[in-house]
Image (cartoon, rainbow, N blue to C red; front, top):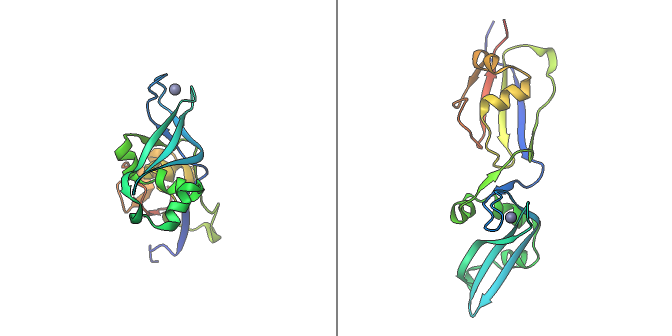
Amino acid sequence: MSSQPHIVLPWVVRRTRLPLLSLRCVDCRSESATTGEGRFRVNANGKLLDVWLLVRCVSCGRTSKLTVHDRAPVRSFDPAELDGYHANDSELVASRLLDPLLARRNRFTLDWRGAWRLDAPPAWPGGAWPVRVEVVFADPVPVRPERLIAHGLGLSRSEVLRRIKCDVPLHRPTSTGFAFTVMAGD
Ligand SMILES: [Zn+2]
């Protein structure tokens, strides 16, 4: 008997809403902010544009501005992108919020707690081991493979360590696709 897995299961990690931001409020010192409905502010200064993404403190409601573009030449913008900023396009809000450059520039981190889910098929035909699982990320949610696998398969952490052969380190958070093989239990 070959021990090569015949069954490949697809798992998808996706967001259920936009994550909150871990960003300290200058008024109340709370460390949680939200993009809410998602609004940009665009300010024209001659041929230069400033674009900000507005966020609100979840505790006191204070609004602050995250720099998206700083004095950028108008003609450097794709017209569709510029329309999106003016229209508060929700896809554009998501893509700017999830862009690591915005977080680095504005010194915040994303708080993904409760903002994502794992879509996994509940079972597979025959229930035979070993099984190969391929995880893809529809959104850049950082997860620890060992925790995701334990959650997705209903295994304890020690079972994960014993039964899983993973292509990436099990304990290091990742948001890029990976695959693993589940070996039969005892
Ligand atoms: Zn506040």
